[in-house]
Length: 425
Image (cartoon, rainbow, N blue to C red):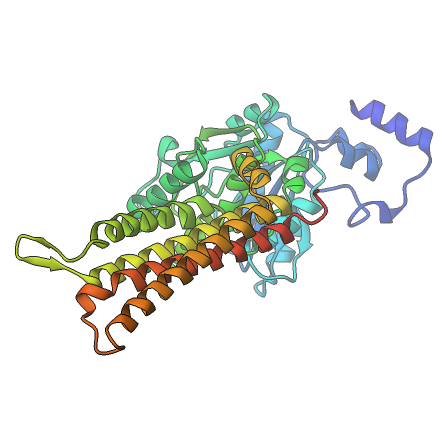
């Protein structure tokens, strides 16, 4: 829609009240043509909103706003600059307004909270987010805009491809944190992104709001990419440069604390790798060891393996059973809440494994375990209930313990799965 068409449409629909816009005035950062129309028409014209989260960035904020505005003008993009302020006490809000940016006050603390508030308040069809520390190339948004116009839903910057200037990224972040977490993201979620935590990225505003992002801290960066991938949005990467930030104070990012929050989020959103695969490995190793030791003590070289080793294997089996059950419940419930995409394989397995079948299988295993205990008790009675040799008599009770616990666990998981599927039958 052109500015003239927007103005004509506004005139035909009547006057616009101040309440129809966030601050009742033409959003900042618009081209000269857009500024000549009414507030509502101007907001409708905005193609790109640049959102800058801010917490005491008085030293660099003006530079970032100017660079973003100059880039919009150079590219001929109708846009605005939105500063999502997280409670600054150094006058950042006044600096932003003085340079033509629109300020959104965000009382809830956190990087993610500030960004989501800014994204929600933005008027643009597209949003580009970047830090307000003057480390990202806000004066070079060409590739981001081109990718958005080409149909991408999420455009990630890649600092390793575009260039990292000396002193711009700490050694641990450059050679350990970012590579490891990016590799984990590709492994766990099959996301074709090489720089998982780049702070400058652009996206379709409606697509991002539909994802319902929830995290409030630095892990918001991971959540955005993971949820976009799970929703099968189109993700592309473009090169961008990283420069040393212009602040005299230390950054808000805390290496180990925020690194752990990113890792915790990645694992929490991947029950397969957090629970399923480790539990499957524990169960497999434990079962193999129990079968091997079921007939009695084994000797390998000078090392003997007896009831104590079998008890350790039994512990592995029970831990594996519990982990598998929790993995299935977590995956199913996350899909039910819309946090993860539904798994066709899990859905088929769950549909075949009804509550009644789970109760039957669990009850059968429980009875078999009870039978093992009764057999051991009978054998003990045959000796007059005297002292027993653990080496020769512990195998059957250990097997009984594993069967009993496994049966009970299957019953619990079956009931829990039935609860998560209420209303789906």
